[in-house]
Length: 552
Image (cartoon, rainbow, N blue to C red; front, side, top):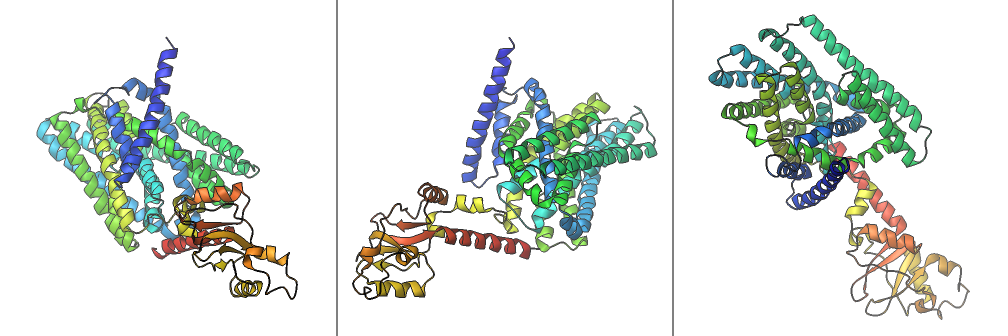
């Protein structure tokens, strides 16, 4: 009896990963963020349609959601270097307060206005409005960062987004704590003194920061001495999970603790931390498939009523207008770059883990109609904004010109073909050329390898500078030695459309420093040399870095 459920869960995980991967590839063809595919697949697997992923399964995976949110927070922290705070700190605070507080105010007022049409209890309506308003301040870090990393963005807009979604969590917690206390007071449940609220908030935030710093310090001291990548990723994950567990035990903010740990390590050991974040980031694609698929399965359309739908609608309107207008005002006040002013309002739609977590907390503090209404409204609206948000994000980062600027050497190789890297100007040496003519070509160019061809430019062999140095350089024989006599046989060659990943594999397999690029008729189209490949990739990376810096 115990084996079957476990087997079903394993099948479910495998099915989710396979469907998510296939869905993301399909959506990619339509230039749609992959996170939308995951959510839609989850919706169809959930209780609203097929019922494969039910409440019991979702409940058993609650620890997994905490893990993914924690890793996301840690990676966001890794982007927040001290140079970023020095340059954008004031901008972050202005935007954070503007968009968070305006969303809080508008959602609260809109919900109260609509709620009074359906409910006679004014105190109930105000409590509902205040709680939903406070939750509206939160922005989803997982969905937001997934789109940024999928499109490999870099620039002032990306930096601002990461800073805001990281800090939004803290603001949301503060507003929720205040709204909860006021709501408890006006509903007569349990009044708590305002000073006590703020002391509790300060304690919770301080505790999160303390746990994050201690975890980050221990991780920094540990990975400093580790050389192999498997040891680094093992210790990193172990310490991150420990931070999350300790935060859960002490009931402080998980995301904030993890983010502080990331901020600490990226500033304390900047060089070594790159390895930690790079390897941790490699885990995210699979984790995000499961996270967002399970999220999509949470929506249950059977719970929706007319009042709930209307309140959910005004919640969406108030939150969207508040965050968009607030972000624009905050960016203008802080004199942010034009791209941030123009496009940031499109990047703050998403909400997920933090908002749902606060809604669940609301059910614990307000059991009954208030708590149940909040969970249904937040789950429904979160599903909607998680579909709209990534699309708006893609439009914004593309419009800002930041997509594709945060790529690595491996990314360039993975996305390039031989024709993108090859040297098309390499001099051709014909088979009947004399040694004197060949040496003249050598003196006029800096290549180390030259293709030897016949009259129709068909590849016959390769001449290398080192080979000529070590042979047949005897005085008086120049006019008698031809290219045909000096050339070496072609060990390997490639087509112009072969991916660079396969080109590198061929070079490594045959231990070559060069590779001729030929047509279907064996005509020489170009030439690849290891040193030129490295030079072109390095040049491309420098160009992208300068382009990203110019946007600021």
